Amino acid sequence: MSSDLMRFTIAIPAKLLDEFDEYTAQRGLLVNRSEAIRNLIRDCLVQAELSDPAAEVVGSITIIYDHHIPGLTQKIDEVEHNYPGIVISSMHVHLDHDNCLEVIAVRGVSNMVNELSNCLLGIKGIKYGKLTTAATAGRLEA
Ligand code: NI
Image 1 (cartoon, rainbow, N blue to C red):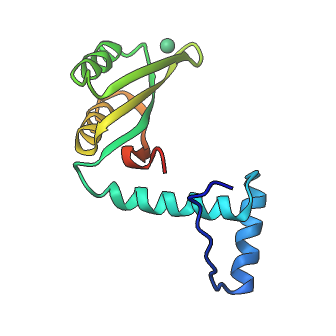
Image 2: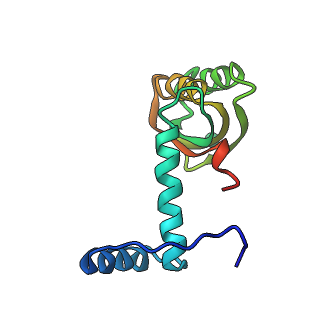
């Protein structure tokens, strides 16, 4: 055990604990109860930090679109080029004859990441789009 780990005792209703154990088991989480609770605490703190528009965040934007729509691919490319410091990388998958999946890794100040996401998701012809903010920069090591 790492020396900076702290132990503490919490009181929790037995039924709630049973449900939590069942929840982690059903999700196939190969973690012990302590790790599961640590994950919840991290997620809680990240969610709180995300309300700060100046927070440094990392995440991904996933979009699906039909590449046959005239000008759409170019428009997406143009928007991504407008945020060179935010877009870290992107992966393009040709899903089928018509549809493309693009996953764009992003990192930067929360309000800029949101602005980029809104620009992409607002492009006419995008069938699906979602920004997933995975963590804030301050939580990458904790
Ligand atoms: Ni494609």
